[in-house]
Length: 227
Image (cartoon, rainbow, N blue to C red):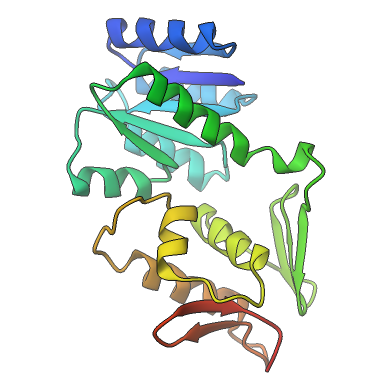
């Protein structure tokens, strides 16, 4: 994997870069947020490792800008800030995982490998297009359409819809969504799922005769063309 490491602490950066390179990865290093953003915009990376507290541009803002621009590169936040609210803010900014400093190198490597597996569908022969009724999602082009009309989704909304379409016709629980869409391995005690489901429903169902995204009371949600 080609990894962009954005870390201003020279000792931490050197240790992480060495461990990643010893594991076979190619690592580019940026020492501040502005440089990291420029390098990320150039593209070509399989994963980002981003410190939250960076000079010139903080990690949360950096990643949020990339997500707003449609960059779906998996990202891991590194931070000494380890409270639940800190983790939640990192994940809400577009992070796929969050590792608190100090950390063990084997855990960093394992988490980076997990990020890499997320992007493997396009090269492993797995399905890259999904269809439920007249709703279509293309993983390669990142385009969603319903009845041929293009639907613009935010990065997290796209991931949520992708997961629901992968499990079309099944009841998807809140725990499943937290773990697989937000990669929360704890309950953040927020309404983040409700907010995103509401936004997604307004985009894919509003104005159409049939609602595809349904709430299963007391169980979760299902995406289905069935009445």
